[in-house]
Image (cartoon, rainbow, N blue to C red; front, side, top):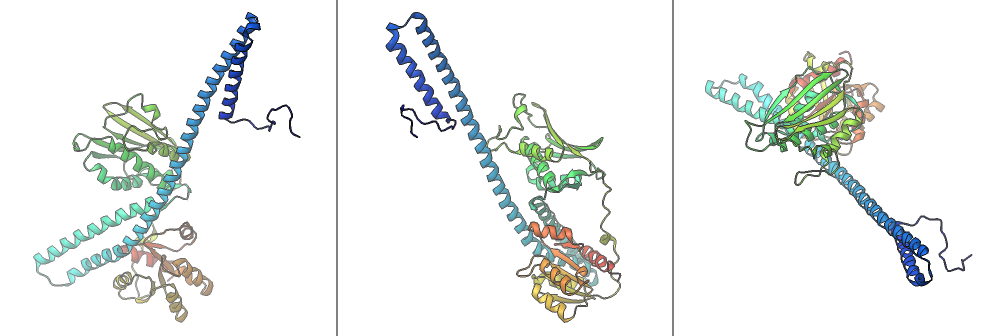
Length: 458
């Protein structure tokens, strides 16, 4: 039923800010008109009372305006943070996909490039060359191999950073994370500072994930590098140190830069707070979020003119260290084996054929061809199978072999230049088959093959 007194029907909804302000403004205006119109007929006390009420409403209106304005600002800031987080997630996902794709594309040719150089090194003494020419050939091959290995390290670091994160905590080798970080930040540091390492290799492992701790370390090292002026390498120093305390390991990263002013220091973990032009102010907040999610803590100490130290405290992973992979110490094969190589890159197949000379090697260019080879003669000692192939992947080949030839799937050794999907990463964790990562060294190949055969009692 409609109301007949001219008032708006009551909906039970709380009015929004603008509506409430309009109503208050109308109330103030009504009181002011009442005071003016009825002033001649009012007593002094009534008039003063109306004036007080009008003044109180004006004050309340001003306070509400300020409150609504502050709420609007906070709402905009929250939306800006949300937009930035979403944009950062999209950028990170795109970069991860790009990095993983690059790693895969580089590792395939790098595998046969490195393998062929090592093969030439092994074969060189077998050929009669003048001494000076032999020495020069050895030097050229050594330099080429060192360059290829440097590319391999860079790609491995890139792949580790782009692997994504399953949020599954595990014991992490912190010195290895720091070494990878320093390699990735080498270009930033080269013209800015000397790097001092205050840690060895005998450091307890910590609770975390390699991806998360790598992201934190890289963020902190780049931040420290940017606080140091270029061209003064002899004066500037960046120190990375690790120390043990009860139940924890403390990482400290110190620079001898300009330091942080006292009025700025309390805000360094505030999102979007930055004093550096072009910065987003999200580096330290992200580091704090990651570290606290791992049950650790982070703090910053700084003195203007003397430098800054960031300390990260992480829980120790009180687990026995994993033994070195048995395949590294495995003896070379003593008799010829029948080996199936499944890879869609012909040069990788050619390399494996050279490295496994003396064995009977059968090749297949894809998963379907591999299953045909196995169907014809399934008595392979080892099956080297690439994971990333068109049509049938290495996972598909594994499942088909397991379903059709029981026990033969245990002889599969996977090879890959890069693992992309979460499904494939989960698959590799579930199966017990070895993974040979491109580019691989001949010793690593022989070790993995020996281990694969060892499991079968050969």
